[in-house]
Amino acid sequence: MAKIVMKFGGTSVADLERMRIAASYIKEEVDKGNEVIVIVSAMAGETNKLVETVNSVSSFFDAREYDAVVSSGENVTSGILALILQDMDIPARSWQGWQVPITTSSTHSSARIMDICTQNVKAKFDEGLKVAVVAGFQGISEENRITTLGRGGSDLTAVAFAAKFDCERCDIFTDVDGVYTADPRIVFKARKLNRISYDEMLELASLGAKVLQTRSVQMAMAHQVPVYVRSSFTGKPGTLVCSEDEKMENRTISGIAHSRDEAKISIISVADRPGIAATIFGALSDHGIIVDMIVQNISESGRTDITFSCPLEQSALAEKALLEAKEKNLVNFHEILQDLEVCKISVVGIGMRSQSGVAAKMFSILADEGINIQIISTSEIKISVLVERKYMELAVQALHDKFELHTNRISSEQ
Ligand code: ASP
Ligand code: MG
Image (cartoon, rainbow, N blue to C red; front, side):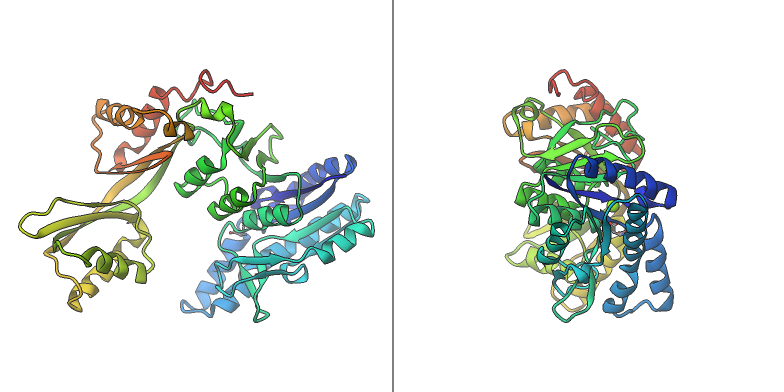
């Protein structure tokens, strides 16, 4: 008998009908003799509604109460799904995070999981329970307060349970068939990948592919949990996120990611001396700005320009942080220029580790389309460029086409 985790996202438990379909997938595993830990999200849209309600009461809210409210969507789903399973004569019961307990840090609204107690759940399985339905996204702090793990956090709950209970797999049921070579809404010929490595998935998730929460991929990688992303709508085979294997290594590029809403901010004429970058980026980080790409120009007569990108919604705050630092005489510069019409395009693939020329090819594909590159950043398995937003679709399509991601000729995937 194996233990497995099955996680159902918001759209997969959106209403009673969808929950019954989820229950039928669970039943299949129970019928095979497996013990199942089910992790549920709130019904689609519920968490957003709860967040809105909190925001409408006060904009400077007590984060502990935010968590108490926002975590509640999952409580409803876990109880209802347990009832549906019981109705199908499957021994099932629900657990809220504090009942397990899932202990977390006290960083409300983005808490980290410290530990998951296995004893209580295991004892129930020993007594004949077949399905433990656990509310995702929530836990309890040392101060005995309810916490949440950040938006999309039920993926993290699922992977953490799979790691802690030594599960054979962690199935993540969602509304897409798996991980694609590019967003199928932009690239008609985008292809579903059968397998993808943790490293690549981590890049794709943090670059804006919404299939899995980034932190859950980090945890899966750290604990080597195989994560199988699949659709509860089509039932088609999904994508397995797992350790690298030979087949994956044979392909150079696995996917093209894009992030539409980026901003480019240039600080013109700052002194080029030790400590300036530390001051600038320190001020930005104090304001919670998520800085992504950075370039510094060659300096002329002791002064230089520094350009960085950040999420579009943070651009005004970034400007404010820099102006404040200037007012306090921490840093001096001539002016700040903002370009709010940019996006980021990235090619990702572990094959890049062993193949040269990927950057050159990427840049020439963009050049052929007349697309100017504004900032470049790379990692071992990724090249990202910042370009004008109006070229986003064109850039993704051209790269997908010229890197021939629509065929699996190179990868000969199974
Ligand atoms: N319900 C939470 C959210 O919408 C957690 C999750 O679904 O993963 O962010
Ligand atoms: Mg989700």
